[in-house]
Length: 125
Image (cartoon, rainbow, N blue to C red; front, side, top):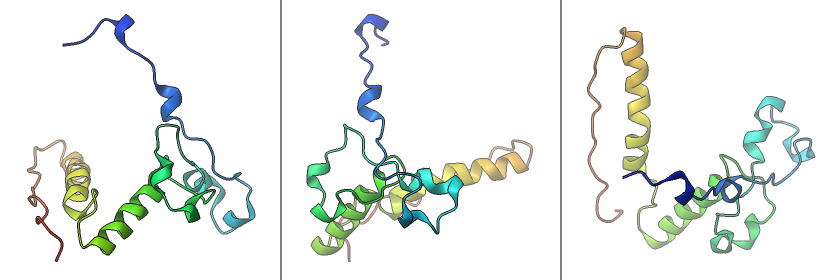
């Protein structure tokens, strides 16, 4: 049930990332200028950066702050023999609808099935 607008709190300022480095930073010399903002989005106040290794502080970050968390999740999963929160099965569920939607659009909006590859195994092998 929707709440009255007066009960909704705007948290946009907690989600906005702050650039980690300037767009003209020398480390981005080999990155096309139109792509540089994807490498410098930094972190937002909502991100719990305390869980990240010290080596990540001030490092370029992208996709609204997700890169460093994805890397940390992956390395932690490898070291612990577990699956990261975003794994191949989750990625397929995020990605396949877009791929199928594109195919559907190429067929004038024909309804196409989206395959479900199931859940991830309970433990990484």
